[in-house]
Image 1: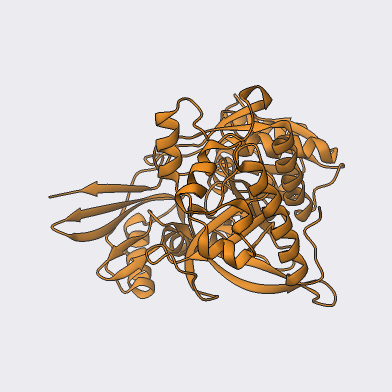
Image 2 (image 1 turned 135 degrees about the vertical axis):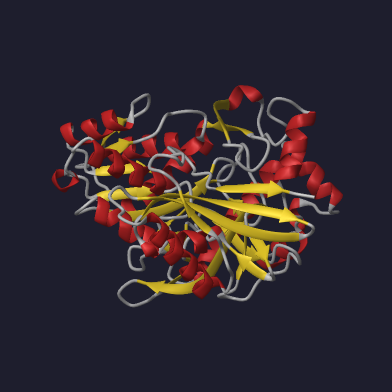
Length: 433
């Protein structure tokens, strides 16, 4: 189903039809959601509209899923079919808590590959491309769906698991890869290794950097740095989650805005504390219902992702309205820190550091003692930096100007800070008394 509709009413009608089909399939087959509906005093036929669904249907939280899988190991009870119907098992990264195992049927898997094809095609990927996947192929879902959907398009897929960064670079150059798929952080690291190995990325055939896994692709300063390090390549951002599926892709007409695949998802944005809808343009938590992953669905799932949504238009006649997430994923609800009354998002810190330039890597320390939270930052200057203390002092001034906070900054020796292949873990939380 293409995610194009003549207007919002047609999209809503499609979503509601899909939702009713999904709800009918879940009761009584899916024990987890059968219990949730019964606890809320609802039957599938009681939901009469999308607004009714958002108002009456209970939210689903990760903690509920974790508790269910703990009580009913190893997969929990959010399964609509007998176990013999399932053919895929994947696992969340566990960076924000207990990992989740997630099963898929062939039908649910095909639904996700269809969504991922939209991500590729929005980036301009065709059967003529050669896509290099620069990560190890573990239990995380995104690598596999990206890989197999590229096969469906007809592109030549080049797996990069089990290789050093230098070996990956050699493969990219020797096999003439035109698309590089990885995290923003790892694309930067590959460019650093290329410089160390005397590999000239100006000779690289890569024309597209397809990035995800962390905020960065929609942060202007990070985007500019990536495109400077990989001359001739354009950044294409997208996002998804193992437990929910591929969710959004960068709107080709609006850089740094992620378009939700609304033909496949019902998206809501709520205040993390009040749980009420936020006004357009206000930040809030993304809540998603996947409409085609019937075998292991999530309904009104609190993703924990902070986003800011604005309606926008696309097309020659501006006929279609869709949901765009301005600035992509701003951060995580549990990552936001409050320092002296200021809400500080990791993406804002990332933007300030990369906009300064001259920083190869950084780490943020968040210390809380006696109910007071303070930040301090370590930076690793790029090779050839003539005055690291001066760079640190300049960044301190940038933080003060942008955040109205004093943030101490110190410089480390070259290579002192860790590099990351998957999601970068730059924020360190230190609890005092």
